[in-house]
Length: 472
Image (cartoon, rainbow, N blue to C red; front, side, top):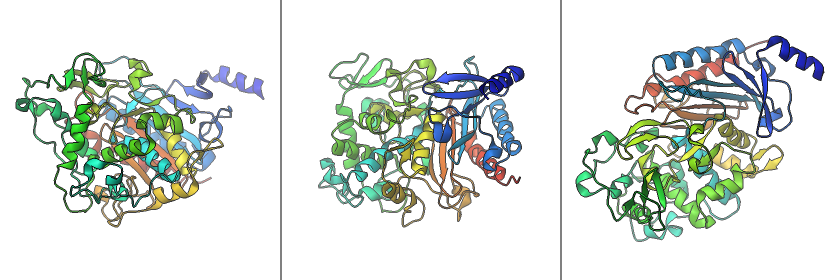
């Protein structure tokens, strides 16, 4: 059998077997397809390549994804992307397209890491909260002020962890924490606040070119006084993070109706660290990322990866005066040190898929349990009273499809999240499927969001569901 396989590979000359980490992958250079050959969700045992037809899906229908992506690159919706579909634990569509930028020779590869933006909320912060809940270290009905003393004595004292997860806390969509690092004359206006991930956007082009950083809080070189790295030559004092928390404490609370808010998850990160007693990224590495073999998922990725392994997100950043590559795009997350509850995580599509396959498997992956079945059930099935969100996860909105982040074909049981930089992951527990899309649609600039306007992520998801109509 082994000799037959080798003979087939040599004869066709279209597939080469490459070793990456502990898994084997089959690569088809002709169309850029990279298909994992591990059994289940990327196990370490090599097995035959999976085809869509193996799980009752149509290769011909799925090939329409290629057309959409290639057209998107040609019309400059994004310079490159990764698209991955897992069905029944098997990777049946796993492709890389395009390049790091429109004028870059470097092609996107399976190990390329993208800035996940708000997809960090569920791939990072929410995992920490779920684990602490699983350990019995916190309850959903706990008041946030129990863990965050700076909220005591304010109108936010009674906000619960559940309300933060549902985005029904009454907190605003965003706050300009980064402006704390600027002198008063250079302080830009508050960012526009909207639905979904737009709350995490700040229109930096509105900043005066003559703005100045506060010399007492910002330095060009690192030191114990300036430990938080924002870029290659910007380091900030931890006092800024403390001031950011005070900004939240002094912000007027609104009515507790649904409003997607980055501030909610910034507080959830603070809660996770207060309960665990360690930085959230350290906690997540130990509990999830390292034992799961996620070699291409990390906060502060330049500490562990070469810059060329990370896809750039912005050509010109006014705050950081240059290209953003390896540092989180979101300026508030950046000035909080790069590890924030709302953004900051970088990853490849394969590593993102592993996290959500674990959740789809009710807390288990490759024979190791990371979360209890009951915790996974509660967090992935509970829906807010408004019906708009799950416990941290985004949900389909069939009653209002225009405002839904996923395909109308997705069942109501689906859960996932999107990211401002052009990312998403959706889990469909009814059809036992995971869909990941990662891009840097913000490059070279994030002004025009063609990806959302054209509904590219949703159109790809529609094709995935159409491919399931395949019949033998």
